[in-house]
Amino acid sequence: MSASQSLDTYSYNRSAWNREVDAGKNQWTQPVSPERIERARRGDWQVVLTPSKPVPHAWFGAKNGRLDGLRLLGLASGGGQQGPIFAAAGADVTIFDASDRQLDQDRQVAERDGLSIRTLQGNMKDLSALADDSFDVVFNPCSLGFVDEVRPVFREVARVLRPGGAFLCGFVNPWFYLFDSDAFDAGKLVVSRRLPYRDQDYPDMMAKFYDKGEPIEFSHTLDDLLGGQLQAGLLLSDLFEDSWSDWRALSGIAEPFLATRAIKK
Image (tube, rainbow, N blue to C red; front, side, top):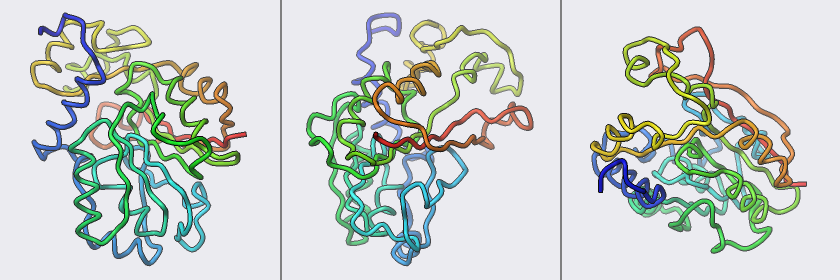
């Protein structure tokens, strides 16, 4: 199938992330070290929703760094990075991810370090395998760009959260997708796209991703990313912006990532 033909983006991105794990070069597929697990057991840990800024412990309701008894869902959070840290800090952890190989990373760390982590493979738009009101926290690090619709995700998150539970979410600010990728890689900001963006609307760009087997992305809108949470019954309580050293073209100009905390009413 060529990149211009109809594409099941969920299945494609599931396979693409499996390939990222097997290639072993993507930093978001690298499992956490045993040393970080040991520190987490002592309440000394950090996790990210976006590339660099640590999420405040207060967003989880942590006490002295501990998460004992907290029912936590890591949504599209496979890779053996955040889930094992939460488990080591005392949380009851379920990791849900599209990529089988990313979930393998969590299982391997759990076995290596004697942790209990439940893993489920599936599409984040359909959490029907999970019961209503079953989690205190849903933790969703930057992954919404890999699904074609975000409102179904937020509705499912609201369903599985208990009343008063927290949804912690990281995502790319839509304006980032305005810029031409090749020029951006060369350190230049050239506006060449319309919003909302999706790789499939740009055949040349899509062909590059498809030929390399890399994941494809969608920008969404702030109406969907923020309004979608509100309309699902998730009330925003805090947020912060973040940057990424890999995106040097934006250095000193703007921070392209957002992390939000929302509470189920």
